[in-house]
Length: 473
Image (cartoon, rainbow, N blue to C red; front, side):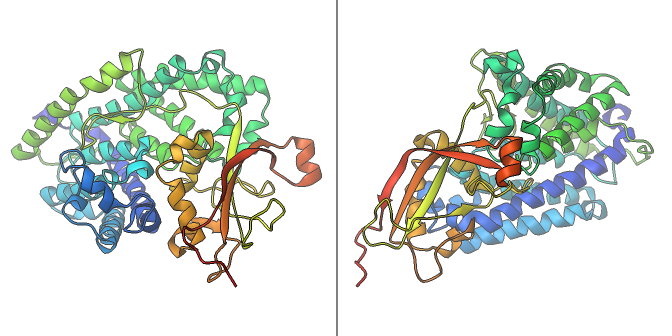
């Protein structure tokens, strides 16, 4: 069928596939390096405990059949290896059916991780990677030109990502309608980056321009993705530029990068057309059936977008085939941080030698400049931001974190930037205190060298010790 393929998007498909493989690689590497203290057999939210109460139908996963830390590590590192092979172009060297199987493997492995990941994997970009990764299975390789329907469905995902985010902002916080949200956002976002202080200090009129440009990009430009070329290319380029601006202004894991990757299939890249044999009949049938299924399942995200009770980042099926997205429907005006401290004293007092733990990404020491970590995802640091908003966000795992710190648990300490206690000498007590953080002014920055100024708010967790711990002689 001549209408089935779009050979002019040959190069766009290649760039998309390599970019998606890179995102997969980061996602699996994050899982491999962080799972033991978060989800392992002795993790804060152990997978074995979760699968005992969640059925396979509710959370389909390989780990429903059997779980061990070794098996999880094998799956995560296998995902890294397959992603690296796809990044190197292994799918182009394989027959069409084998290339599809090669793309299906990381999707199935990552689905198995996300569906047992609980709080640690409750972010919108997990579902976005799975939805995009599933469609990549049907995009073909060098044996066929890109299927038109799959190119269309990839744009449909991007439309929902951007338009859904635009709608949730307009329906949510009034500061988006007043164009004032960016007066606060760069300071209060979950994980600031090295340039976030400078973005926050931009003139307020420029912040208003930023907010207005965001509304145009998310509420108007998405419709142009379905326009003829070169309009679709211009729309995709505008979205890519916006995402790169966000990359510079903060750390949002791989959300910005996968959005950039999703914009590529809308680009008519020069020199991208190639000829190829007609697609085999079985491939056409599979693609048509898959497209029909995904379009049918899309009615739920559409209803959600049209609803006044629109929700963000929800999956409507356990396979994460079609999801709803959105971000920052409300913007915090004040930044709070939980500072975790320990002491070696047997009897904790206010004047004890309390030493603070330093996290990798979240603000702690006011003199430490925020780092660049995205697209790598520091899951504990992100959840500490939520914990500062409300203890309810930390109810399931914070006590377990404190217990692991009291034990000087090696795997847990690897999630941190620095522990103030040497191996073999864990703290006797742990406490947590809530502080208000704000960026220093330009004058304060020059005089003190600090990036943050912080003010004590209240006790978050009173001094706590291990139950039944013996007193030191």
